[in-house]
Structure formats: structure tokens, C-alpha cells
Image 1 (cartoon, rainbow, N blue to C red):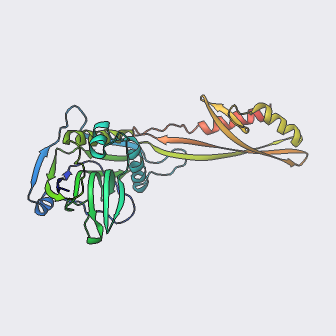
Image 2: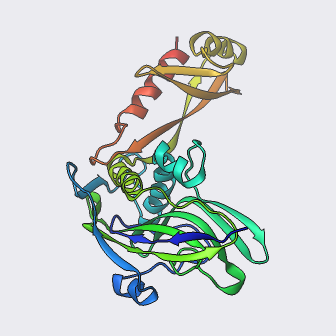
Image 3: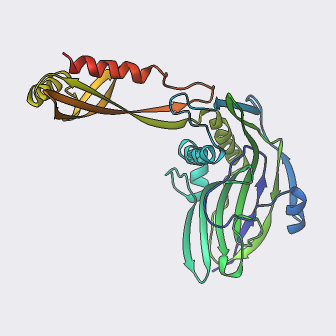
Length: 318
């Protein structure tokens, strides 16, 4: 079989800050000089960054008004990695060009080829050292021989990498995320022969478009939170009578338990009725899921839990 030329390229740009997944950190190039010293086929290109906001200054509520729990850097980084992978499915053109199919992907597919060789195909998002790295990969690396698939030096690996530094800072009122889209990126092109065919990466405009979609998804990241609330009510009625009232007043439309409707949303309520003195004691519990939004607001008000408790206790006393 003829040897097939495989171009190995790496594109490095600049984006937002976060740490990353477990395991050994990849040896990503830290500067254009470092990459240039590894390969003479070096070129610098401008990014096409028209008609969008190039600098982002995103603000969240620093302390959750419900739990009084502050936003931490590690929490935000974990959420960012998960939500970016979910939100930023590659466009069809990119997927077809890199993997030959139209199925979207969020994680690079790694396959053990034997003999220390591993193939990499897809996009990987890593958060290291206050930098967001977006890798587009297609090829193989011999990990047994110490080849790093992320470094741009593996001879059978085509890789493009956008590098986006970020700054995270919390103060008394807000948790701030600042980042700027890169003005340029670099390319290292290693042309080599190999006996196994691998498709090259998509055209630069497709990769740039995908990286830009990820950047523009940053202001949509929501921080999920939840909290449980409890209460109890004493009544001068038998357990059987109280249970009948609960079944009548708090019947759920969607499941066999109890619930109340608040702001057009059904809130599940867990109840327990026990004998107490000459009557009964009802204990109840419900949970609220909500988000901290990137405009320094929340999807819940501090008064919401009190309003829901009032609805529950009104039904109990009916």
C-alpha cells in the first residue's frame, strides 16, 4: 500500500480560563517560540473575528442568596467544562471532514491500536493553568515511546489547538469571568508518510467557526444549585384524617406522591404523618433547583421557599 502523506498541524489561539479533567496534563505549547523551535514549518495567521464581542466580562452572584454558598473557581471550572461540551456540538461540515460521518461529538474518541499506538479523532476541551484549550485531533501517537498527542510533535498526529486564557475572580458581590478572543493563531505543518490512511482536519474556516461558537457560548453558562426545605405542622386530627386531606389537596398530576404548583411548575412534596399528643404531626420536605445566571441574577427569589411553604400549609389546614 502506498504511503500516504499526512499533514500534522497545530493551531494555537487565545480564549478563557479554567483547570481541567483528571490524569496527566498534556504538554501543550506555551508560546509561539516554543512551537517554532519544535518545527520549522511554522506560520502565523489572523483569526476571522468580525461581528462579535471579542472581550467578555461575565458576572455571577458571588454568594448564593438561598444557601449563602459562594461560587468557587473549582466549581465554575467543572461546570464550564461540562456545559461547553454539551453546548458546543461541532457543525456538520467539521464532523464530516474530520471523521467521515455526520454524528456530532463532544469528546475526542481515543482507540487503542496496539503496540503503544492510540488513535485520536474529534474535539477535546481541556482546562489547565487558567487557560481553556480546544483541541481538534485526527491521527495517532505512540504513547509507549512518550509521544504526546497534544503537543504538536507526534509525527502521525494532525492537531489544531485554540488557546484561550481567562481570569476568574470573586469579590463580596460578584464572581467575575474575563476573557478575550485571540487575534491570531499559529500553524505547524509536519508532512510525513505513513502506511495507514487518516483524513486531515477540516478546513481552517470550519475549525475557526467551531472555536468561535464555543467562545460565544461562554456568556450562556449557568451555575446549577439546589436546596431542600423542611417544615412541620401539628393538627388536632387523626392520622387517617390528615392523610385523607393530603391526598385530596396535594394530589400530583404526574406521579403518585404529593405536590403543589408554584409559578406554573409542579413542586414535589414528601410528607410523613405520625401520631402526636391528641392529634397528628405532619413533616414535609421539598427541593428547589435553580441557577446562578451570567448577568449577576438568579432564577429564584429568597421569598419563593416561604411562598411554597405557605401553599403546603394552607392545603394541610384545609
